Image 1 (cartoon, rainbow, N blue to C red):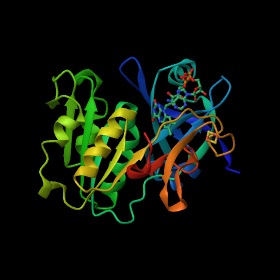
Image 2 (tube, protein in one colour):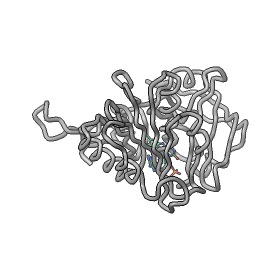
Image 3 (cartoon, helix red, strand yellow):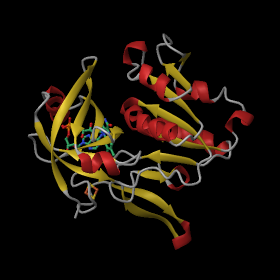
Image 4 (cartoon, protein in one colour):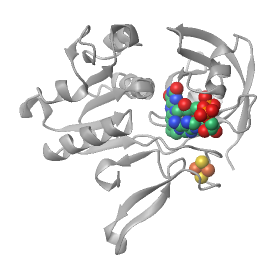
Length: 260
Ligand SMILES: Cc1cc2nc3c(=O)[nH]c(=O)nc-3n(C[C@H](O)[C@H](O)[C@H](O)COP(=O)(O)OP(=O)(O)OC[C@H]3O[C@@H](n4cnc5c(N)ncnc54)[C@H](O)[C@@H]3O)c2cc1C
Ligand code: FES
């Protein structure tokens, strides 16, 4: 059984009207979390809410998450004040596997840019060459732009509005990359389902290994309730697919195994 921790909000930074970065003091999570893992955070409504870990500060023993307001739980979490206390389960899920990675191409969109930031931070700390492509709606929505520029030497933004970086979605940039630039790259994508699917099809055509972080509705977050199941190909088991728990077996899967 995963341990639950009582934690304190030590810093809140609003990003526009609908998003915030929240930093919590929690040595257990700060010292053990891997990019791609998530936490399940309390609010005053039934069930904790899952959020990808955005960064850790091992010296300060804090971790941060980026939250977008979409419903009652996230609205309440964003309204919290520094000093407020929460309970949390984490770090949860498998996280990204960096063991055979020579070069990284990180692709983020929507709230996926928050966990992508943790992967960029990890790459920098571990001297893994890394390029990041984030898709935003517009310049006003380009959260963490400066932080990505610092964390990663090769950072590219695309905007639907065309007021920052390349106009269009992330594919508009990816399609301009030449094969020599891409050789030996492992692709990691977090974002809306349609974006992850398009990027994984592109990566397959380029012969690149691609990992995606699936987002399913969750309840327990620890593999007990089966609310979050997704279909994963299982040819080696003689089946078309098996059901896997996104929270415990994922949320990160090899894109080639996912049935979209
Ligand atoms: C692995 C993972 C990582 C995530 N990372 C982030 C992140 O970094 N930043 C961020 O802003 N959001 C993230 N989300 C989405 C976030 O969990 C939902 O937006 C949030 O749970 C919505 O809660 P609500 O009460 O505001 O909305 P409501 O719609 O009122 O929620 C009702 C119930 O449905 C669940 N639910 C609703 N939408 C989702 C969803 N998309 N995914 C899972 N459960 C959902 C809620 O947890 C709650 O139990 C992530 C989801 C998953 C599964
Ligand atoms: S959320 Fe309960 S099994 Fe995944």
